[in-house]
Image 1 (cartoon, helix red, strand yellow):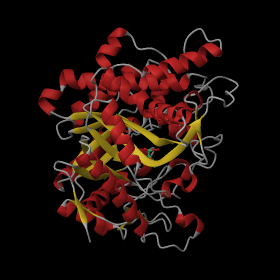
Image 2 (cartoon, rainbow, N blue to C red):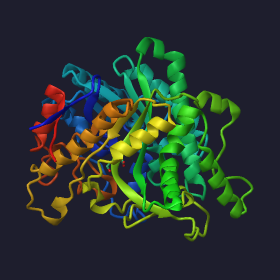
Image 3 (cartoon, rainbow, N blue to C red):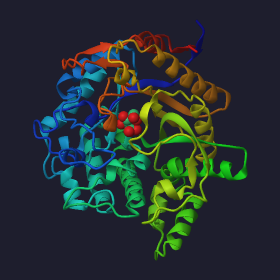
Image 4 (tube, rainbow, N blue to C red):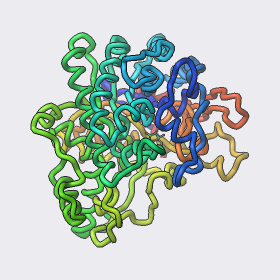
Length: 483
Ligand SMILES: O=C(O)[C@H](O)[C@@H](O)[C@H](O)[C@H](O)CO
């Protein structure tokens, strides 16, 4: 067996998120998130088949099992998210739920006891229903100070033991679906809300970063990252138009988040294109809000590292000749990058998560190095979404050999790019530590390094056959080269 050594200081681990593993959705003082409320009602496509994640893996009661599994896999870092409504049921510090706080304190203690570094995501798709009622949600600027208050509370409460933070998970993808869920009588999505949402998540990220700078950096010495997801775009041909389309696809997805926190504003190409289509739609102003001078100054350099959630790539062609959406443009339509052969609309991914495109962890890191001052880059999600059980229920859920090949080729590409091309890579986190509730795929897409017995309902955790691969990386800090 050949191996590729991990670069020095390279952090290796895995992740989950609160709503996907904790369960206990209305236990011990936790209030409902907007997603909890949404999933209790009749849901429009593509959310119609989503189950209510009321129990999922019940990590709220079984977190010690999760940590034991992470330790058995020799992981260095465990990325988990804090449920905002579990610690602040009213969305603000008027009410602090001590049971919720204690849950995370115990989880963090347990991790440190097993020499695993906790990494907190502040918000992973589950902001409080109370905050929607008070602020109008992510389409309204009033949510920005609410997030600052929440972030300040997290730093004060957990910052003595946590050094790695990410603010809002995949704001670019989040604002194309789960962030703008219609809630009867309270919120109805409007054209342009997708950009307003992205805008407010960036300002919320900035406020979190700045409150850390002002009050905690000196004493806690932690780092804060900004997270984005994309299906990395490659051009369908060598034509100028297709190459431009791919560049736009990546710029709209990653640039919309990374550009403001590194350079202090949106990419010019993004601003021009949305302004152009907004004018064609006879709108008095662009659907893309602008930052004030003061905001631009406070945004610049408001991330210690960039988080990239990387899965499959996609091929795009020039989409400028495609018909425009009747009611007005969206982030997806304005980028004029037409998917070729892959239906990647949210909720329609199908078995795409079983496809390995390791070149994504070469192309994207190089592009991020060149466009974002080689700011440290952390691959905070990458994983193989096993759907074989959906078509063959007799398949052995512990037999996940293809997962080894998947992570090996992605890691080999990433490490080669980091070492040969001088890309500043902080680390890599597999998605996911345990099998989770996978949103529109419910429990039918298994990303876990650890099996959770949803089938028989015991929720017992069991290492899968791929465990040896992760243990080798954690123990000997080298990646087995598996084709
Ligand atoms: O991208 C997302 O939606 C999230 O970050 C995760 O919550 C998913 O579970 C993962 O990406 C696999 O789909």
